[in-house]
Length: 463
Image (cartoon, rainbow, N blue to C red):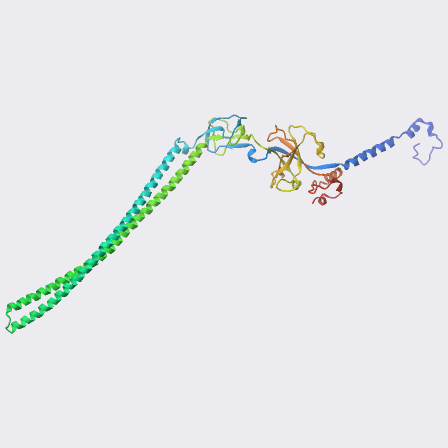
């Protein structure tokens, strides 16, 4: 009956006489199934040629575009104790508004008049500097006076030496005259003695000549003594001249030494005064650290050390703030395999468009057909990290795209975001083939049309 045996019975049995065989013969279900299968296959083939936008999907978080716009913790600039709070959490502050008042806890800064007393020390040091300067000036005047006195003394001794020279000349002349008189007296004595022996002159005349001779010899001795005395006086005057020169040189050198000492003390005092001025400035600056103020327009988010009377160390957080004015951006992380396909403002090339789904804002998306998505927001890459992050991926910053849909005003820093980086348009069959082979997405700098794509490997397609 099923005509599966070589011994057929169809010539013996008329199948048309049986309703079941007649219905089976008239059924066209296999034809309809065939047509449905062909239709489905045609639809699938048609869908495979539809354009598909390649994309890179990544999870990220909302942040700010500039570093100074991000949340920050204001630290304590000094070791101090909290005395009074002027704000509450959630309060909006203007730049310069006082947040908290701190008091000193270090013994070096407990004096309330520390700045004024340090200024007094500066004034005293400045007075000492003036005294040392006056002392150096007085010593300079003293040196000038001693140099003038030395000149006068030298002139006086030189005149004395000239007088001694003149006196030596006079004494020499007296000695010569005495010697001449002695020679005359000797001749007269010899003549008188000879005449006396001959009986011509009396003895008294001989004795007179002898006395005269003795007198001339005494004059010679006196003249020699006087000449020697004059010469000794000249030598003494020369020694006095040398002694005066040495004495005043020693006095002048001592005065110059005292000037150097005074100048050294002056420089030390100036150095101490400079250090005291620095201390005064530091103390004045430190006094301004007692009040922590808002560095910019911001909101107080959390008080890190809230208690009154609590002590905090230098650099320890006091309060965390959030700037009131900021430009939002989204930090996304991409895999190293996809990282070369991303361009920013500095790297050149075409910057890919990024679509976002923010937490709290419903959206209906088709990743491959961004034009059919609903509730997404656009952005563009503005910064790329040159160093890989600790999670093994590269961080990129995406800001709001000019001319695109405005991001929600209620969006806040820290909320989650899912980014879809749109790349090249390719046929759907090519995308399926790429996904099955694990190849990276294609990104063409010259924007090749989808109809020109052939079945090639990605390495051949990417320039």
